[in-house]
Image (cartoon, rainbow over all chains, first blue to last red; front, side, top):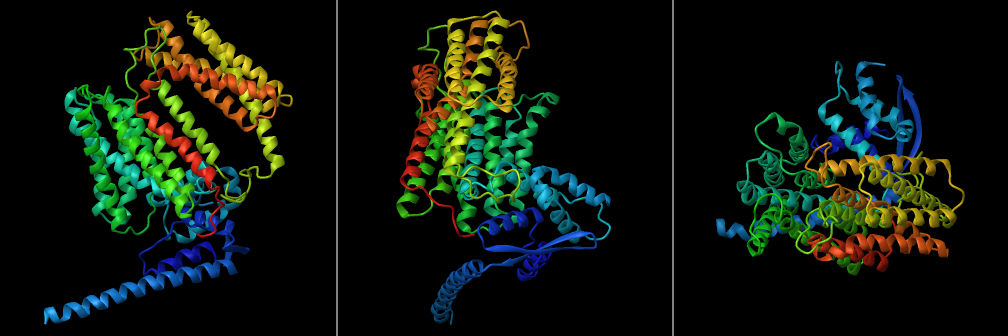
Length: 94
Length: 491
């Protein structure tokens, strides 16, 4: 995926809440590249504009899986708390 | 090339050329892809994003291990100090003298604290940028009004804290802790400074003594707390570098606050240990510790070209040798420049001559232990020789009540100019320490460090709040020695 595609994808995934700006995006891509989490994979010129493509590496995918697991765990814990609260407050409000 | 593309490329000049060569076309293409049809100029948000990205790249934020996270740790502390210092100065100091434009800046920083607490995330960085712009504008605006500007020491400190707060604040969602930290911290800082001022033996008289020493005590406490957090990170097995960077970042302007007045116990004709000496000494010590902490994350940060740094033992030796020739050139250049200045103003004192002699001998010792000087280091020496009288003249203007000539306190001016030797002497001592493999280099290091001590240690009691800051520096180094940390592998 190229930089413009990443920005659009992030905007779509966040329901329009997060809009990355190019300076921030390429700073992050620099860091991810040097940590070996993404890698550049080809480039092309479309209508006079340079597009470089980036791909998630295997270590990047592994780290992403770990992060997803951690965030899912957090969300599950929060949901359980919310259910308990709802369960506890139901009789009081009844 | 369209007008919009040309304007984007102009903004891209904030990045180093090497980065523009490798990434410029890609960034401009993405910006053009994002721009709606008919747009002719970049939006302010795009401009701010590119300027910040360029500055972060030039300052090496992305390529230094731990600095990015360190800025994130330091940012809420800096904002708390800005809000607290603003409140203290507005509440306790401003009413004591003729009114200044200071409250405009203090209000802007307090507003930024309020935005951090209550406002939407997207408003915080613009609020910080606006407060910084207001602070920077005061010296230019004040002459157009009937109000004076606050002293430069206030504006300098606020500016650097503001830069830390702005660059360390990410445009990301903030939880309750991140929202409340700056505001609660600001209350603590203001109350802490007020408590110190009430416990102080001398009453507050205005912006100068003892106000900045009192504020400096609170900033020093914040620096000490960050140093303790760095040590606790080591104990927890967490990376200490981000906390070490945060300590030093806050310590840099922290070292500018103080000192106490030494007029009462200094009886010679030398100038007392003043703000100039303190700013130079504190800044130099913090910057040298930063240089020691600096650990290049990799050669590809800010993407290739022009940012390669040494990493192997062999190249490190070459680096140390080349530092030696640069230090020798700097010391020699300073000696020549200082001699020219004191002769020029007709104030040749034993103190000034001794400083010139020490710089000359140290330069000869360091230079003789190096390979023959390269053209670049020689040019550097020449630049220092020309720059030193200019800097000394600026010091003279400052110390003679901002007058351009007709100075009367020439001996004092020459003594203050000699204090500028703190910079080349510290550079020389540090270089000798890093590459002490020959007797001549060791001798040069001892000479530089000895004269540095002579210039500053007799006034040890006057260091005031800077002392805790300087104590934090070796503490930080100790933490680093306990746990040399590898670069993070996480995002």
